[in-house]
Length: 278
Ligand code: SF4
Image 1: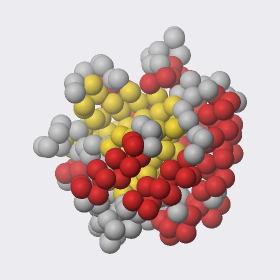
Image 2 (image 1 turned 60 degrees about the vertical axis):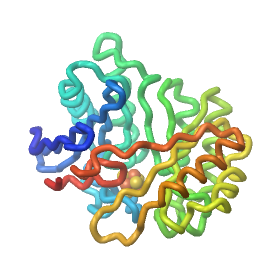
Image 3 (image 1 turned 30 degrees about the horizontal axis):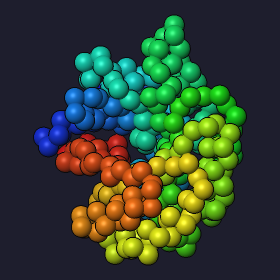
């Protein structure tokens, strides 16, 4: 395997690495810096079969699963970029981690092994579009990692237009699995919500979201849609975003706005496409 390309954001110092594995399969990983702390965003697959319409990885199609050693190689490269000090690992790069769960799980076990890198599981987050059977499995796994579930939006019809996975794992089943996960593991779940301009960013949708997550021990990550060529979505205006966040916070839900990083090098959320962009 080799690092075929390295890009550094002129805006915020984010680093994106493009790996080419032995068979030519590409995958990207990203190192993000926030208040002096570095995080690594790792890929679990080369491409992705989920075909979410808002995601550049989904648009490139699926090549193959990455092996656990291909995943840990990304960690090594990110650690080196971060000067040997990484605060967090997120499995939010290319691919759906729960559709390659055996290899991702093995990578997590290796990275957290006291005889290996000894990276705490509590500082790892796996993000899924909502693969229900694996959310259920995770609840019983004893792993200490954090779970993030991408709801995308709060309306099942809207969601069906944005991700084909809604057909296989409907929003209601995803939420039920997430609720059970919280009950069994005693942990909270992060729900990710993507804000599209004039589509799902009004007060009505904030109310809908609050209704859906009622009774679940959760926090919300609001994500601004990041453009990529060939899609006609637009991101929400900042005043709408702030209003949306305010409505959730007012209802007592801890709500974070994910700061966009590396957008000038195609490294922001939903932009990874394994091309030498930027
Ligand atoms: S959002 Fe995630 S699950 Fe959907 S296509 Fe992109 S990488 Fe795959």
